[in-house]
Length: 281
Image (cartoon, rainbow, N blue to C red; front, side, top):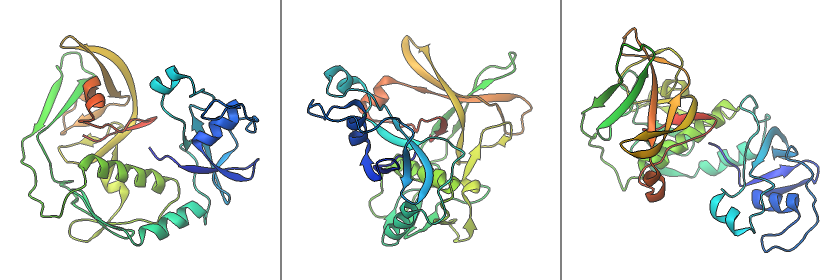
């Protein structure tokens, strides 16, 4: 999910961080000092002074000087107000971000970055190279069909590289790029492993009834989360709302994954969760 460190308040005519916006909204500084309530609503934020993309401050209005809130609530952050919005042409944030990336070079298990060009370890018809044995779970819409697990037993691709960036970080970065691309940021060029041009649509596959095979791509769509019991543990089950078809089988399935508290607490696994949810593993 794309977030923003600093955004523009159209009414106050200045840039604000999420923390500062929250303080100005509740009328209290981070140290508990009473200050003027200069922000009147949560709908006066834009991406930049010359961009009409509207943003919202998540968790605005919560008093984080309260120890209970500080310990149990996520600190405020800015996110897009609607998925249907785009950056304005010549948006200062997009221009600055593009200029900054010109000087970046990075290599991960999934891509090599050379400025604003990303050479993916992706190949049409094959997807990304598998990096471990993965288990995918699916819910059948047919009550006569049991849940199935698909295991890919390919060994990790033997990629020659310098020190790798942790794979989940590079996947999250790709998701951010994809979201920005959908909001009118065309600054990134993608090449496959043979240096042939590809698009984000080649890599990101929506869940929605279309055929899915055992190709390592990034599948995304609307999802719901609910508590379930699993082997005596209370865990979160995240399920795609829409069904899909697996390997040309006529039966429809709803892919899902289980989220364990220990995964979050120990930071051993990461999941990108949002209104539209990308499952990265």
